[in-house]
Image (cartoon, rainbow, N blue to C red; front, side, top):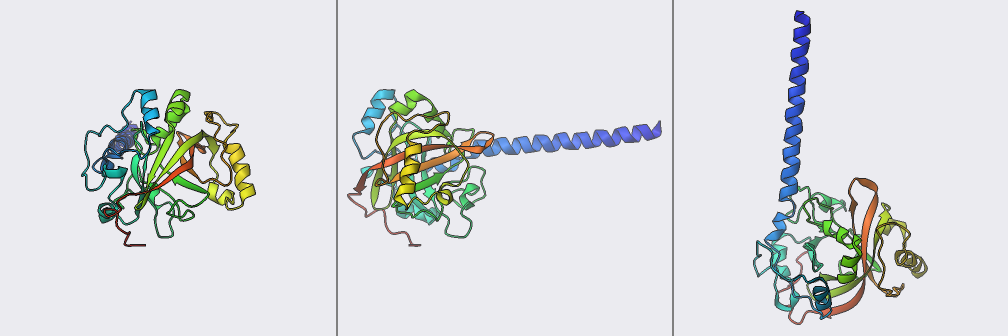
Length: 288
């Protein structure tokens, strides 16, 4: 009997420890979900899109994509003048931040990083302050140049449950949303790039830049033929833009929930490359 009581106490103690550890992990996880992305709010300001076409998207949805968030950022970083970003101020935070991405009518309004070291996935779990963070940062790998001159520039971001980072890409699974929201804006120190979204679909988890030689126009065209007519589910491609190997595209990649072997891709083709009228606030990256 005494032995049974001792065994019961041991089992009870182990069970309590496991419950406490489990609750601790849940609290930690929920805290990270809550805080992920909030560090970016202090940088986000309404950005005037540099093209009249954004008005079409606004009118079609009834939304106001340029309305400021609750926590308005310091204007000296995320400027409304010419729809530009003050990179000099941004580089005071982190010189790895080299671009800014914005998609109207979504929460996607973030700096883009590229880690100069050997770990291309560094920003998968580090934020823009180079702090360890569950949400990471929107980033590219060194396989892509930072001037977006490659045939296909791939940006990665987490599918965060609190709606931050690249979670909003899944909004393009809705046909009405896809049809009404056409543009991705990339802000660089000296110019603004406008991409028109031509496809959104589920794909496997292969590494695109290792799997395809996009510098080979035949390979790139074959890839584009598929991207414009994908066979996967959750696909929309209704614009008929006829993207060719002479174009430059951008690919935004995020996860598909618990499906580890798949990714959700939103792709746009470059339709406008505009120099910033006044680049005096942009500066030159000290690492360049």
